[in-house]
Amino acid sequence: MPDLLIRGARLGPALVDIEVDEGSITAVVPSTVHSGARIADGAAPKRTVDEVVEAEGRWIIPGLWDEHVHFDQWAASRRRIDLSAATSAAEAAALVIRDAPAGGGLVIGRSFRDALWADAPDRALLDGAFPDRPVVLVSADLHCCWLNGAALARFGVGEHPTGLLREDAGFAVLGQLGDASAAERDAWAGEAAAAAAARGVVGIHDLEMGYNVEAWRRRTVAGFDALRVESGIYAPDLDRAEAEGLSTGLVLGPLLSVGRFKTITDGSLGTRTAYCAEPYPGTHDHGVLAVGPDALRAQLRRAAEIGLEPAVHAIGDEANRLALDAMIELGTGGRIEHAQLLHAPDLARFVAGGIGASIQPEHAMDDRDIADRYWAGRTGRGFLIRSLLDAGVHVRFGSDAPVAALDPWHAIAAAVLRSRDGRDPWHEEQAISAAEAIACSVRSRIRPGEPADLVLLEADPLGATGTLRDMPVAATLLGGRWTHRVV
Image (cartoon, rainbow, N blue to C red):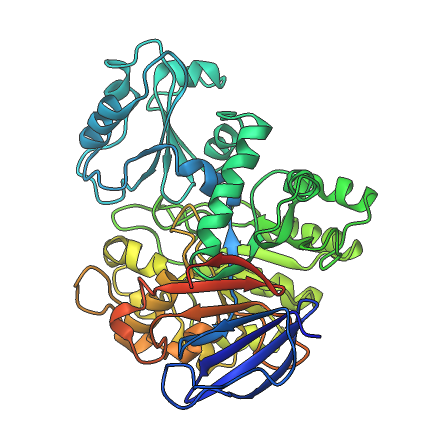
């Protein structure tokens, strides 16, 4: 006896009934419902089932994945002071002063974007209002942190002249914030997961820095069951991963498995540290190559020895070229994370090396003005989607949350429309169809034998481009179990 029958769901142009048993799809057949959206009089399931859900003509798609998140940072960021609207360092400081919680503890802000500000972040802007209370402001791209004097002293860098810590120095602070206990972080993760399920998300590839496998094991033992989770591994934890026998794809629980080996080879566009062939305007600075070719090869070899597939962060065109060089030479496969700026010949090399591209379309919307300034004359080969797909590259979508919101419909809308907030499309030649964008956001298909990871929608995802970004999600099914439902 099937566990569930979803009746009258719209799959493309057809209405279908979908049977689910023990977490998998067991049948997809023409619906017992007539062609209209309402239930036919006297219609009944062909067999007795535990639960019948009338879809009433709602659209159905496979469950959505976010292929690149920093989940604990995303969960925590929802409680930090939002600086995304600040248009200057002075304005950001004013927002912190206005919104800082009462008391004497650490003040944390997030999501500032200083690349286009006329003034520069400086510790002195924060010291006047917070002479003794530590303040840490995290950039939108996570690649720099802005600290006041008290925070600099707390984190052991008290003599820093500006308080703006980029790349490894900023990551070191980010990893020590400690603004919540493990129990609080787990509760925040549960809330963030429920919010993701409400947007149709069934799974994430979590690339949180640190050994987050441990946190996810704790959460699953405690009953976390809202998402499938693949937990990534970073270079400092390769020995530990080997000692515990971890390899990509290893199942650690009903919804938990081991993800990929993540290494960060360069910086970011927003922090002007992405490693590029051409220097940033008005400078001799090409960005930061955090992991050089020899070190990258050594890391990839080490990861391969224990069965970890690579996920290599590369944003600038030279960082991407060097990453492809190493991955092709070693035959690692895997994928490049971000791939924001590419040399044209490198498109074919993705395919030749069996290397995928894990990209975040919403970044193009967030950073279009920054790219126009700092990658002037090169944006035609930046944030490519159409070109990657046409070259035959296996493309997956993510958010990089908290860099962008953990909402796959934002990525889908950005990829299809190449615009946001009523602006003209940016490099419209890189737009793709809604069907292609959804295909980049799912891992399963609606057919017998596939997991019952399904999403019911209130609007046509292939025809309602005006509602893509805010797509109304009626229900989310994960392994045959409802994780979100309003019908």
